Length: 261
Ligand SMILES: *[C@@H]1O[C@H](CO)[C@@H](O)[C@H](O)[C@H]1NC(C)=O
Ligand SMILES: *[C@@H]1O[C@H](CO)[C@@H](O)[C@H](O)[C@H]1NC(C)=O
Ligand SMILES: *[C@@H]1O[C@H](CO)[C@@H](O)[C@H](O)[C@H]1NC(C)=O
Image 1 (cartoon, rainbow, N blue to C red):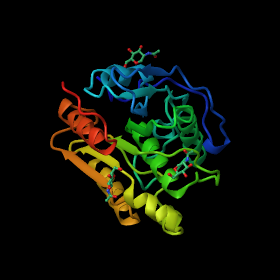
Image 2: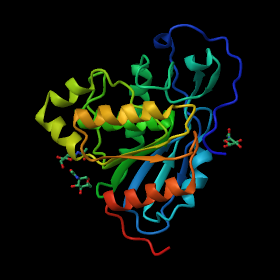
Image 3: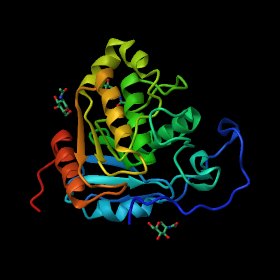
């Protein structure tokens, strides 16, 4: 099932995450659009998964105008698992907006994602989506796009048109308000940016209350084009009903041709 936590493998790498250098990404899977290419979305898998886990699911969606790029995260020690290693987009101690943030890891992956999108043709709309820790990276990318820069100060290089985050939380929430509200341009970008967060009420990995709180922080920061969808009885995985809502939302927000299927 897509969305399960990784199998843990014993690692000898303990210690401070900022001292680690991890840059080996795994294989990238691309799903070509079946119809007219209108948008490209990088989709980021959950902890311990790989790009193929999601590319098969995405390929089956009734979204013929989207090209999906599904990279695979580096394998690294994850603090939340006591240093055990698995594929992870950044190191994470707590799967919530309250924990400390691996800012270097987030900036590195957000830049990798922007780089994957930077070679798309100019008339193609660009988006980022994902599940769990992948979705956290997607939401982080939305905040970098709105702010115009990464946390490390470098310019965010592409124009994003939409971000989707399933079963996730908002990283780097503490200084977000200052970053966004410090400039009129950022405030304007945040206010209109299409952002979809969706979360199962029965999620016992990234608790529902953390998803809810993340949505509240984004909303109070000025992300007014935010939809927060919740699903009764849904745990830390996805179901067809949720993906159908994602399809409808993407079709509307990206202005895609309506599919006949
Ligand atoms: C990717 O994940 C799937 C399970 O989702 C697994 O069956 C497959 O072996 C993995 N592929 C690689 C290259 O690790
Ligand atoms: C992003 O959009 C703005 C405003 O529409 C435009 O001026 C800028 O050149 C675009 N940047 C890129 C990298 O496409
Ligand atoms: C939300 O995003 C869509 C798609 O870009 C746009 O048409 C709409 O005007 C936005 N809504 C707000 C309130 O900015």
